[in-house]
Image (cartoon, rainbow, N blue to C red; front, side):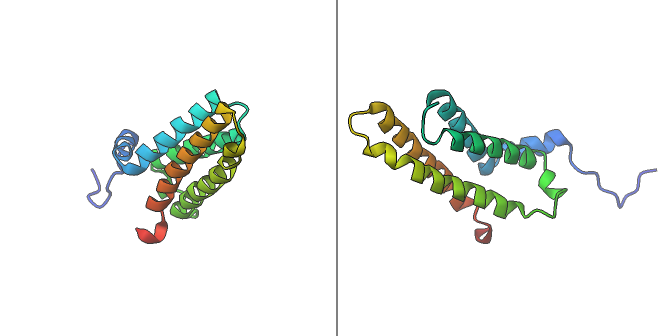
Length: 135
């Protein structure tokens, strides 16, 4: 006999598809794709290792959020971790992209600077919407 007090948790597929419909999922996917593009195109860029780290962290947070694992690991304050990840990425990409504009006559360095500023905008927007006290 089924216990009427026991409610079953949603399936993993339902949790995953519900997460994919959120703004956070779109931002995380965009950040992951951006980091992959930077890794493929700019192997000598100043922020190459920064992109590696952000790719790993982005995939980690995507897995946590898409599987609903943040509900089971309650001792970590996930909104603050996500906010600090995106805030640190925005600041570090800004610091890494400014010197790229100081190189005169090098179109590759200019493109790296433009990609860095695009990353600042992407991670900055993620920081703005994921601020825990705003929610």
